[in-house]
Image (tube, rainbow, N blue to C red; front, side, top):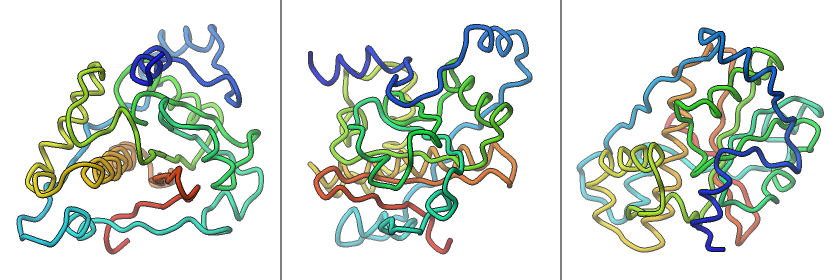
Length: 231
């Protein structure tokens, strides 16, 4: 089965290895109480600067920074047992949690195409359960390099609304993306997509909710936190 088909088939399902499954009763409760859903804002993508720079990654870095995740550098590493909502990609491997120091019993894990925060039943129910019932206050949006979903060029296998969200990223950063190609373009798209999801979640929720953007490099088994420049 191709990676494209596999990820489309499983994008609505929680991964059974670690996640605490939502019960049917809980789903019905949320369906009958739409006000319980934390409504999300549309992602706010800030266009890149028009000033010509040497490479796409140089230009992108004027807006955000990548910092390697070290031991004890993230809140969950300093507080064993701290609960975390993990929003990951269906196309990813499953070793990034261990690499970043997260234990199975402290993670509510949700995956979809391209680790996107979108306005559908699955995503909204997960957010509601994590924030309202479990009182989780740390959210991690984790993408990965080499993603078959998030690419510099449109992927015809990716359905709506995921493809529309990616088109928004490409449109907002079109000038910068046009200056590069291939793997470098794909890596930049992965980073920009994560940043967009973090911005959307941060704007939609109270200040006591911390949202972290992380990109995972499979080749080096290393995680990098994405932060806006100056933060």
